[in-house]
Amino acid sequence: MAGDAFGIIELELNLMYEILYTKVSVVHCKSGYICRSVCFSSVVVALALFHSEEKQGFDGFDVGITYFLLLGAIVLDIIAIVMLFFTIITLMSIQSNRTWVKKMLNLLLAVKNRRIADAANPPRPCYMQLLHHGWSESVSQFNLINYCIHKRSRWMQKLIDIFHLTNVFDRLNYVKSVSFTGELRNFIFNELLIIARTWKHGANAEEIYSGRGEGVLRERGHHNLLPSVEEVEYDRSLLLWHIATELCYSDTKSNAAASTGDDDDIGKYRNFSKLLSDYMLYLLVIEQQMMAAVASDGEKSEEDEQMRACNTILSIDTKFNFEEYIYVKSVLFDACRLSKALKKLGEKDKWETISSVWVELVCYAASRCGAYTHVQQLNKGGELITLVWLLMVHLGLCGRFQELGSFQPFNFNPGEEQVEATPFDISGVK
Picture: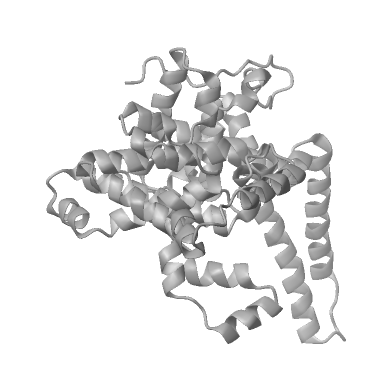
């Protein structure tokens, strides 16, 4: 079911992209069809007239260039028509009418089936293959420790700062991409199902929406770890868990347990934790516009933030040694304490806990990022956090959308009655 759910979500996001960032909504109307037909016919007529005219006295090179431009315009129009035929709106319109066109379209698109089918990632219907161009199914990674180890030289950094190219160079040097595997898709979907069932069974909705790891830690009885998510701001919590995850990931005992194959789940949850940890730090450092509202909880005004910062500074006990205070308040040392506390757990419990906490941290950011910011990312190819956000909406886990009720699907056949869409039914999912 995870593959089907994410397939529907990708389809919806691709549809949003086509409507917001392409001319497909303009072309899919009578006036659009007429204009495109007139333009294509005009180029064909121009080519025919030019070919029938006598060309004595004209330079051969100029004649060749003219043929090349006219034929190029025709080819571009044909490509545009073919791409228009394979848009989501066209395919959904064809899907609603069971005609021979659908069979021919499925036959043509079957050639485009480049996806490798496996148990965790079943193949999609052939008419979905060409739609997969929207999201690359890759997850960007940024590791803080790797960034600190491979720091740029001072003169290079000054040169980059002069031209304001820090973000560009960081992407080139420190950001990498990994595949969004079927196993990770299933893991995220199952974790969200657990959260959805908790909410369906009468849990406090506010706790579900604002949870960023507390639910997992309480459920597993790790109350000593709650301060790392409850008593710190979200961005600091991300740094704490990112460093702690990296320390646990690099631990020799953990590596040995994952490599021996004694328990396949240990290596699986370990990799999930690493991937989501580096992905969230990528959003925090590189995609700052997405995390700006999340880091400040999106609810406090700038004046409130300044007052809180001033109060924090004034609360420092000046009798303490400064170096001692830095030791106590350092994110690095807090992360070291957190990693040591996590290492006291069993290997399987440790990585199951870390991976589940990271899913909640992703969900927290996804639900507070803002729909406008998610839509903006579609123009850049989309992000995993956007897919998680829309999946949460379908499962009824985004508090901001509860009052909006069920979604109304786009109606591509104005003559037909529009059917109300409902969230995913999870009652029969095990």
